[in-house]
Structure formats: C-alpha cells, structure tokens
Image (cartoon, rainbow, N blue to C red; front, side, top):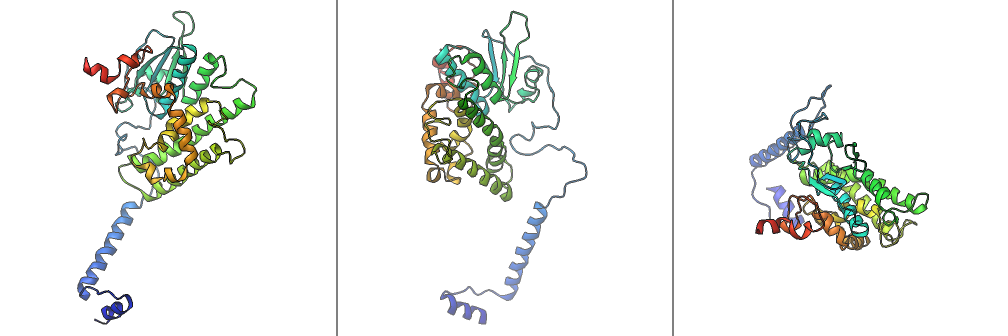
Length: 338
C-alpha cells in the first residue's frame, strides 16, 4: 500500500505486508494490555488498613503487632557477654567489634543464632532483651550472681556500649570530649539513618520483592547511589573532612564497622544478586572499593562475618561461638567431617 511504499523510500527497508484488520487488532490488543497494566498498578488505599499476609520472602513472618508469639527462654553460656544475633549486616557489625576486642584485650563472649527466617526473634526470651524483635541483642552479666543483666539492643548502641566498657585504649572509639569521637559518632548515626534506604528500600525492591516496581526501584537506586557518592567523596577527601585510610582519618573505628557490613559488602558484590553491576560500582566508586578491601583484610572482620552465619559455604559458618578456638574446630565443614 501507499504507507508501505512511503516508509520503504524513507527508511530504505521493506515493511511486512500487514492487512488493515490485523494492524487494528494489534493496536487493540496493545491498548488492552496497557489498560490491564494500569488497573493492576493502580491502588487506592482504603479508609482503614486491614492486615493481610504479604507475598515475598518475609511476608509470612511480618505482622503489624509487637510482643512475643512463643514462650521460650534464651540459652546462656559461661561468659559475661551473651550475644543473640545472626550474620546479617546488622549482626556482623557487633561480631566484628567483639572479635577486635578479643584480639586486643582478650574479651570473650558467647554468641547464639537467632533464626529470623523461622521467627525466633519473637520468642519471649528475645523480646525481653529487645522489645523491637530485631537482631542483634546483647546481655551483659556484670554484677553478682542473680543480678539482672544489662540488656542492649540496636547495633549502634551495642557498639558504643562495648567500647565504653572494654575499649580502655580508645582504639575503636576515641575518648570523650574529642573531636574525633564526635566524628566517629557522626558516621555511626549516618549509617543508622541511611541504612534503611539501602536495605529496606533498594535491597527489598530490587532483590526480594515478589514483583518489580519501576518507581520503587528507581527511587531507592537513586538514593543508594547518592549515599555511595557521599562515602566516595568522603574517602577521597572531597568533603573537607575525610581522605584517610578509614572513615575517620587513619584510625579504624566503629564507624567503619557500622558501614562496612552494608556498603562495603555491597561494593564487593556480595549482596542483592547482581546489584554491584546494576549500580556500576567498579566504574564509579574506586575509593570506596579500596576502603572496603582494607576492612575486609582484617582478621577480626573475617572471624566476625562467620559468627552466627547459617548459610553459605560450610567453612564460613560458625553457628555458635563460645571460644576463640571454635573458628578452628566448630565451623560447619569441620563438624560435617567428624
């Protein structure tokens, strides 16, 4: 027809012989598909929200109420420090510091896994330590027998608490009253505020959500890349306050331990599938990659990442930690070979 001949002359390529009926049918199908998609994507919130089980990895576990769902006490080991956690990014922050404190001061602790996938965070024992039912949670038995232990929850709070109690040389948290301490705490709270955008935002919608929502992925990808650029600029010294080997100059502190399990592991390509490629990590954040490698190379980091890990390579899984020697004898590869 005339349309085909005009198109052939303009683009110098033949068009298929499509009848008017089939063309209109195709247009109708396309329009119908668009209407269906719009209907599926359109959501009008009701006047009153009613909880219904969600899909996805955590949909069957999450509920809009707090408190215990099961009566069960937590186990207790022989050391004054009792950690109940899991080797997620928030849990690894604490075990990285505990292993640094062990290496420097001989601090010992017991660590028991809380399997959040099976709802162990909702037992009465765990809720009594952390009413928010989130790992990590710490009990410190420092008084006489029978005294109630100090309970500490939220990763940032635990790291500051442990440094105040055990870091007598101020190796990981500078002394009270110093500018360096304030800067460390600045970055500790930066991570606390920024982390949910990475984990609950980008990580959830890009990797875990049962459906892919472009708006949500675009929104949290933009924010994640902005945060990565904050770290990149800081480590490169472009913000007027950074430029050292670590987050606060050349001293390795709890600021690094807070940030690495989320952002360091992200740039290493170890979380959220192919997120590192999607975010163009290698091409965009060289200083951040160098910093992550320095933190990763520490022996305490390697040990801390194994504690309470219930997945991955058997040699990287230390389900419970009670002695330093457990890393040599109690990882899953050693136990399975017995």
